[in-house]
Length: 359
Image (cartoon, rainbow, N blue to C red; front, side):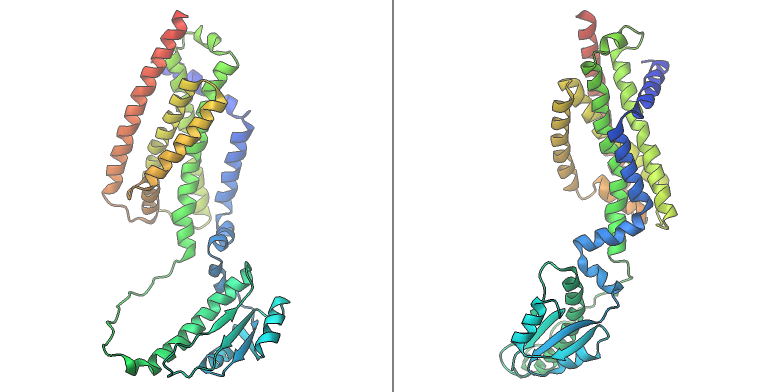
């Protein structure tokens, strides 16, 4: 295998990449995500955890208090988040339906030291973002009232509960979960998926456009042609991943171990690229190859995510600086799998090349 021939194929494929509109749009989408990660963090976090927006809300919500007066009403009236109005239950629920109220709280006529539990009913709007924020703010008040009830009824306990020593949180929350647990792995491994689909197109188009015979008439062998396309897709990985990391750093997101992250991502990305290459060589038709590869990729990703020390988890730990020796174990495993797929790709490409020469 000659390096000069490989460089010719790589240059040819890079020139053709500018004609791949789908690939360019995917790259631009990643660029948008990386550039506006801080802005998207708030929107995407609110989709899977609407309560995260409660700390940003400074609006005073109107709630109706119905039923027996209790310490709960005092907590609500002292809160800076609510304007509390005493109402009858039926008019209050009707006003809630008309969205004149944010919530309705009904407290039954049960004494704090009664035997039966105090069953408080909360009425709120379904599938409403405001309700999620209101529920979170009310939860803190309900917990205070629950603590009062526990103290009143503490004499009933026959045994002393074991106190739990829970360490104080250092902060972080949804922002760090989103950025380090989702955004960084998504941005870094998305180029691998794109490159894997791209290598299938690059190989199958040689068959569909009937340009393979012309290519085989040159000194370039079939195996060199295949590896040239593989290396062209592989070179995209560190370029894209490095650009995303740079944009995240510009956004003010601290990322540790950038060189190790690029090394892990580059070597790990070779595995799906080689799987896509073998799929394209076997089926030689774009639609069938893309379908089979997509199905196989989903199975592989689900299997990998089931492992505790998977590459996605490792990237997160590298980014926050908590990765240990397992990073080298995972890297060794990735290299071993990549080596096996490389041998299989070389053997299969040589076999197909001999078939073309004899036909």
